[in-house]
Length: 222
Image (cartoon, rainbow, N blue to C red):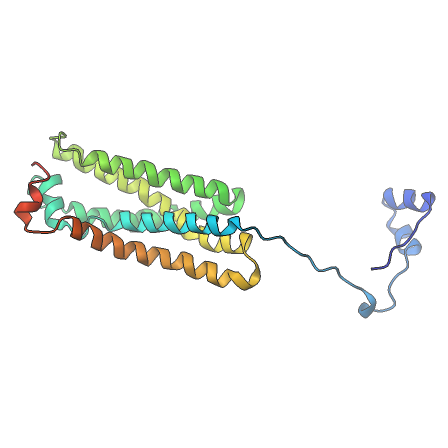
Protein backbone atom coordinates (compact mmCIF):
# COMPACT_ATOMS: atom_id res chain seq x y z
CA UNK A 1 0.00 0.00 0.00
CA UNK A 2 1.39 3.39 -0.95
CA UNK A 3 1.41 6.18 1.68
CA UNK A 4 1.19 9.77 0.52
CA UNK A 5 2.52 12.67 2.63
CA UNK A 6 0.44 15.82 2.39
CA UNK A 7 1.28 19.26 3.71
CA UNK A 8 -1.09 21.10 6.05
CA UNK A 9 -2.87 23.10 3.34
CA UNK A 10 -3.64 19.96 1.36
CA UNK A 11 -4.97 18.16 4.45
CA UNK A 12 -7.15 21.15 5.30
CA UNK A 13 -8.71 21.24 1.86
CA UNK A 14 -9.40 17.49 2.01
CA UNK A 15 -10.94 17.71 5.48
CA UNK A 16 -13.22 20.52 4.29
CA UNK A 17 -14.66 18.05 1.80
CA UNK A 18 -13.41 19.61 -1.41
CA UNK A 19 -13.88 16.64 -3.69
CA UNK A 20 -12.46 18.50 -6.65
CA UNK A 21 -9.26 19.18 -4.79
CA UNK A 22 -9.01 15.51 -3.77
CA UNK A 23 -8.81 14.28 -7.34
CA UNK A 24 -6.15 16.88 -8.13
CA UNK A 25 -4.09 16.45 -4.96
CA UNK A 26 -4.04 12.67 -4.66
CA UNK A 27 -2.43 10.73 -7.50
CA UNK A 28 -4.86 8.51 -9.34
CA UNK A 29 -4.03 4.96 -10.45
CA UNK A 30 -3.24 4.59 -14.11
CA UNK A 31 -5.54 1.61 -14.50
CA UNK A 32 -7.89 -0.52 -12.45
CA UNK A 33 -5.19 -3.15 -12.13
CA UNK A 34 -3.00 -0.74 -10.15
CA UNK A 35 -5.58 -0.37 -7.40
CA UNK A 36 -4.90 -2.61 -4.43
CA UNK A 37 -7.50 -3.56 -1.85
CA UNK A 38 -6.67 -4.58 1.67
CA UNK A 39 -8.47 -7.82 2.52
CA UNK A 40 -10.43 -7.78 5.74
CA UNK A 41 -9.34 -10.18 8.43
CA UNK A 42 -11.62 -11.19 11.28
CA UNK A 43 -10.75 -12.71 14.62
CA UNK A 44 -12.61 -15.86 15.66
CA UNK A 45 -13.11 -16.77 19.30
CA UNK A 46 -13.20 -20.15 21.02
CA UNK A 47 -16.41 -18.99 22.70
CA UNK A 48 -18.20 -19.49 19.38
CA UNK A 49 -18.54 -23.19 20.21
CA UNK A 50 -20.18 -22.32 23.52
CA UNK A 51 -22.65 -20.04 21.76
CA UNK A 52 -23.38 -22.79 19.23
CA UNK A 53 -23.85 -25.37 22.01
CA UNK A 54 -26.30 -23.11 23.84
CA UNK A 55 -28.29 -22.59 20.65
CA UNK A 56 -28.37 -26.35 19.95
CA UNK A 57 -29.52 -27.21 23.48
CA UNK A 58 -32.26 -24.57 23.38
CA UNK A 59 -33.52 -25.80 20.00
CA UNK A 60 -33.38 -29.40 21.25
CA UNK A 61 -35.37 -28.63 24.41
CA UNK A 62 -37.96 -26.70 22.42
CA UNK A 63 -38.48 -29.63 20.05
CA UNK A 64 -38.82 -31.99 23.01
CA UNK A 65 -41.54 -29.79 24.51
CA UNK A 66 -43.33 -29.76 21.17
CA UNK A 67 -43.98 -33.52 21.08
CA UNK A 68 -43.77 -34.51 24.73
CA UNK A 69 -47.52 -35.25 24.97
CA UNK A 70 -48.18 -36.78 21.57
CA UNK A 71 -47.06 -40.29 22.61
CA UNK A 72 -49.07 -40.12 25.85
CA UNK A 73 -52.52 -39.62 24.38
CA UNK A 74 -54.34 -41.89 26.84
CA UNK A 75 -52.53 -40.53 29.89
CA UNK A 76 -53.05 -36.94 28.80
CA UNK A 77 -56.76 -37.50 28.21
CA UNK A 78 -57.17 -39.23 31.58
CA UNK A 79 -55.42 -36.49 33.54
CA UNK A 80 -56.34 -33.27 31.73
CA UNK A 81 -59.80 -34.25 30.49
CA UNK A 82 -60.99 -36.48 33.36
CA UNK A 83 -61.27 -39.38 30.93
CA UNK A 84 -63.36 -37.57 28.31
CA UNK A 85 -62.16 -37.09 24.75
CA UNK A 86 -60.89 -33.48 24.76
CA UNK A 87 -57.86 -34.17 22.49
CA UNK A 88 -55.51 -32.23 24.77
CA UNK A 89 -52.41 -33.94 23.37
CA UNK A 90 -53.52 -33.28 19.78
CA UNK A 91 -54.13 -29.57 20.40
CA UNK A 92 -50.78 -29.22 22.15
CA UNK A 93 -49.09 -30.47 19.00
CA UNK A 94 -51.10 -28.21 16.69
CA UNK A 95 -50.50 -25.12 18.82
CA UNK A 96 -46.78 -25.26 18.05
CA UNK A 97 -47.30 -25.31 14.30
CA UNK A 98 -49.87 -22.53 14.32
CA UNK A 99 -47.96 -20.20 16.65
CA UNK A 100 -44.69 -20.75 14.74
CA UNK A 101 -46.33 -19.43 11.57
CA UNK A 102 -47.67 -16.35 13.36
CA UNK A 103 -44.52 -15.45 15.32
CA UNK A 104 -41.94 -16.41 12.70
CA UNK A 105 -41.68 -12.93 11.19
CA UNK A 106 -41.32 -11.36 14.63
CA UNK A 107 -38.43 -13.65 15.55
CA UNK A 108 -36.73 -12.87 12.24
CA UNK A 109 -37.15 -9.11 12.73
CA UNK A 110 -35.82 -9.09 16.31
CA UNK A 111 -32.80 -11.22 15.39
CA UNK A 112 -31.89 -9.07 12.37
CA UNK A 113 -32.57 -5.73 14.07
CA UNK A 114 -31.33 -6.25 17.63
CA UNK A 115 -28.81 -9.07 17.35
CA UNK A 116 -28.19 -12.60 18.52
CA UNK A 117 -27.95 -11.84 22.24
CA UNK A 118 -31.45 -10.40 22.57
CA UNK A 119 -32.85 -13.15 20.36
CA UNK A 120 -31.33 -15.87 22.56
CA UNK A 121 -32.59 -14.14 25.71
CA UNK A 122 -36.12 -13.86 24.33
CA UNK A 123 -36.19 -17.47 23.18
CA UNK A 124 -34.75 -18.75 26.46
CA UNK A 125 -37.18 -16.73 28.57
CA UNK A 126 -40.20 -17.87 26.58
CA UNK A 127 -39.01 -21.47 26.68
CA UNK A 128 -38.51 -21.39 30.45
CA UNK A 129 -41.73 -19.56 31.34
CA UNK A 130 -43.85 -21.75 29.07
CA UNK A 131 -42.27 -24.92 30.46
CA UNK A 132 -42.88 -23.74 34.02
CA UNK A 133 -46.56 -23.10 33.30
CA UNK A 134 -46.89 -26.57 31.80
CA UNK A 135 -45.32 -28.05 34.92
CA UNK A 136 -47.84 -26.16 37.05
CA UNK A 137 -50.65 -27.60 34.93
CA UNK A 138 -49.58 -31.11 35.98
CA UNK A 139 -49.88 -30.46 39.73
CA UNK A 140 -52.30 -33.12 41.05
CA UNK A 141 -53.87 -30.72 43.57
CA UNK A 142 -55.51 -28.77 40.72
CA UNK A 143 -58.86 -30.56 40.57
CA UNK A 144 -60.49 -28.48 37.83
CA UNK A 145 -59.77 -30.10 34.45
CA UNK A 146 -60.61 -26.86 32.61
CA UNK A 147 -57.96 -25.02 34.63
CA UNK A 148 -55.45 -27.75 33.85
CA UNK A 149 -56.16 -27.50 30.13
CA UNK A 150 -55.96 -23.70 30.22
CA UNK A 151 -52.55 -23.81 31.90
CA UNK A 152 -51.34 -26.53 29.55
CA UNK A 153 -52.32 -24.68 26.38
CA UNK A 154 -51.13 -21.30 27.70
CA UNK A 155 -47.71 -22.78 28.43
CA UNK A 156 -47.66 -24.43 25.01
CA UNK A 157 -48.39 -21.12 23.27
CA UNK A 158 -45.52 -19.42 25.13
CA UNK A 159 -43.09 -22.26 24.40
CA UNK A 160 -44.17 -22.28 20.75
CA UNK A 161 -43.39 -18.55 20.53
CA UNK A 162 -39.77 -19.34 21.41
CA UNK A 163 -39.55 -21.57 18.34
CA UNK A 164 -39.55 -18.47 16.11
CA UNK A 165 -36.16 -17.46 17.53
CA UNK A 166 -34.58 -20.91 17.47
CA UNK A 167 -35.40 -21.35 13.78
CA UNK A 168 -33.62 -18.11 12.84
CA UNK A 169 -30.62 -18.24 15.17
CA UNK A 170 -28.61 -21.09 13.55
CA UNK A 171 -27.79 -19.31 10.29
CA UNK A 172 -27.22 -16.02 12.11
CA UNK A 173 -24.78 -17.57 14.58
CA UNK A 174 -22.93 -19.35 11.78
CA UNK A 175 -22.64 -16.11 9.82
CA UNK A 176 -21.54 -13.95 12.76
CA UNK A 177 -19.34 -16.23 14.85
CA UNK A 178 -17.77 -18.70 12.42
CA UNK A 179 -15.29 -18.35 9.57
CA UNK A 180 -16.23 -19.39 6.07
CA UNK A 181 -14.82 -22.91 6.29
CA UNK A 182 -16.78 -23.71 9.48
CA UNK A 183 -20.18 -22.24 8.69
CA UNK A 184 -21.48 -25.38 7.04
CA UNK A 185 -20.52 -27.42 10.10
CA UNK A 186 -22.23 -24.93 12.42
CA UNK A 187 -25.41 -25.03 10.34
CA UNK A 188 -25.42 -28.84 10.27
CA UNK A 189 -24.99 -29.12 14.05
CA UNK A 190 -27.84 -26.73 14.77
CA UNK A 191 -30.01 -28.46 12.18
CA UNK A 192 -29.45 -31.84 13.86
CA UNK A 193 -30.60 -30.42 17.20
CA UNK A 194 -34.23 -30.10 16.04
CA UNK A 195 -34.82 -33.70 14.84
CA UNK A 196 -32.84 -34.99 17.82
CA UNK A 197 -35.22 -33.10 20.10
CA UNK A 198 -38.17 -34.63 18.25
CA UNK A 199 -36.74 -38.13 18.80
CA UNK A 200 -36.09 -37.54 22.49
CA UNK A 201 -39.48 -35.86 22.92
CA UNK A 202 -41.26 -38.96 21.67
CA UNK A 203 -39.06 -41.63 23.28
CA UNK A 204 -38.31 -40.25 26.76
CA UNK A 205 -41.95 -39.79 27.88
CA UNK A 206 -42.78 -43.31 26.68
CA UNK A 207 -39.87 -44.75 28.66
CA UNK A 208 -40.86 -42.81 31.75
CA UNK A 209 -44.47 -44.04 31.60
CA UNK A 210 -43.59 -47.67 30.90
CA UNK A 211 -46.07 -50.38 31.83
CA UNK A 212 -49.82 -50.64 31.56
CA UNK A 213 -52.14 -47.65 31.57
CA UNK A 214 -53.42 -48.52 35.03
CA UNK A 215 -49.88 -48.52 36.41
CA UNK A 216 -49.14 -45.21 34.76
CA UNK A 217 -52.20 -43.53 36.18
CA UNK A 218 -51.31 -44.52 39.72
CA UNK A 219 -48.56 -41.87 39.72
CA UNK A 220 -51.05 -39.21 38.59
CA UNK A 221 -54.09 -39.09 40.85
CA UNK A 222 -57.32 -38.37 38.95
